[in-house]
Length: 241
Image (tube, rainbow, N blue to C red; front, top):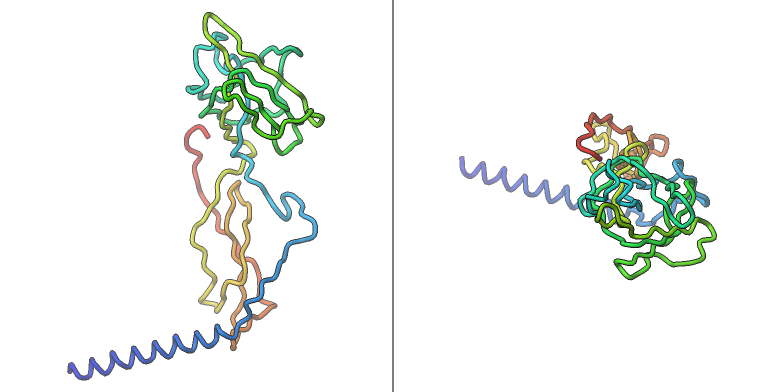
């Protein structure tokens, strides 16, 4: 009995070795060429998309609390409401691109000067100058493509009102999630992965695979190549951003 089991085990090892050898020989002959499939011109939402929710906004402490007393510092601000707008040397400042979501994890800029870009711009500011940090973020220029804004440190009921730089979680339009769940070709239909791309669905970036039917000799049936449909997800929005 033990002799028969030993023979069967050896036969299994031999067959597996033969399978591996055959696979290796087939892979050696396959092309290693890389084809650049990028288009000569890219169009947003058609050929590419962006993660546009990981951003920061400039706010003033007096803007973000029900009372105009600046009783909360930048470090503890957690809000999604603009209560009022501060005065500057050029009048009341209304942000060109307000945060359409939740603002938190702020840092204190002190007195701030910045170049604010138009609401159609993909970014809010081209450069920011901070008195607290004693430095300029970005390359400072004459702000010809935006509005040069300065917000001073002020006092209210004995409290100092500073300018804050906060993380903004855009709830309405922001895409802030990448789904990296396991993807598999339809192997029961003799399909293999022939390509992949990121695809946006339900405000989430998914890895979508391209698949095609495997033919003898490692060839692919070109007429069978297609993008595998993404599954529908059920998810809950939890928390404040």
